[in-house]
Amino acid sequence: LTQSKLELAERLVWIGRKAGVAGNRISVLEGRIALRRRDFTAAEAHFRQVLTGARIEPWAYFYLGRTYTRMGRLQEAIEVLYEGDRYLVNHPERRTKAKDAIRTQLGLAYVLNGDLEAASAILDSLIEQEPDTPEVLYAHWLLTVMRDGVEKASEAFEVFRIAEPKRWEKGTYHLYYGLFLKAIDDLPKANEQFALAHKYDPCNVYILIQYAETLFSLALKSRVDTDMKLSKAYATKCAKIVRRIFEFDPVNPSAEDLQIELYNEFDIQLSQLSQ
Image 1 (spheres, rainbow, N blue to C red):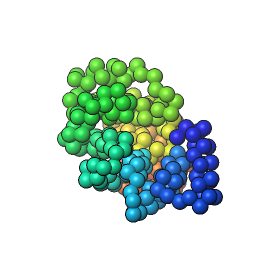
Image 2 (image 1 turned 90 degrees about the vertical axis):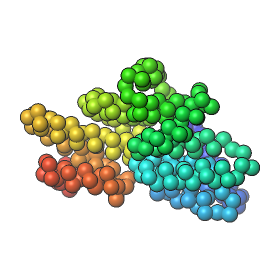
Image 3 (image 1 turned 180 degrees about the vertical axis):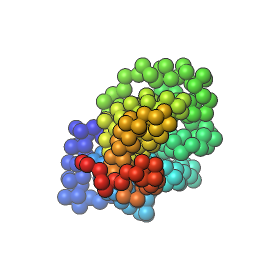
Image 4 (image 1 turned 45 degrees about the horizontal axis):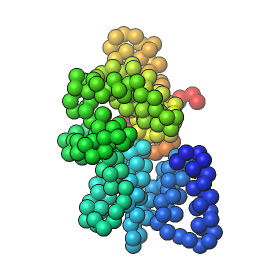
């Protein structure tokens, strides 16, 4: 939802509730508003409410999967998106554009979770069916990089590198660019891209996780290279990003692991960080 559409959506929800009109589409819209405002808990509750109702709205599967992906809870994203895909397979009478959207998001979640075989089974067919859909192009490009290596992905990468994403796409663009650079072990440049992704999408927990993990790797590498000052700077920045993750997801397992490693390797405690 863009800002103008967000305002219209809030108006529609207000009118619907005031008129006593309650339904799945209103709940999905409320969930999308919450997701747009980075209130992941409220978004999850709205989408879950729809999926436990008598008549399911398939778009709730898509947006709940997207919510979990943005929170870095990839296994939960995969489970709910797979459930949505199976629901539509078992209900062919439900004609909806949500089907391809769910499958694209599921393929992307598989890629991000490292299950390239499952991702290939979905995205290789989708790219033939929907070759001009940006979300499919993004997901399949990332799969190509992770699965086939830099050589086979170089042409796709060049197209991607010179792309000019719209303002609301820049967070995703820099995230994917960073994942590519991380895959070829160019950690300094990957770090730059994750920093930009965080700038454009500051509340995306998955971006924060990638950013923090890269900073931690750079801290270790700098220590090996005996640049202790730089190593400490990377580690301290990592700790601040980890603390930010906990603000959105207090029990995030990736953040918990990093918190432990920061203490073990650098004697850094989040509670002792300056603001």
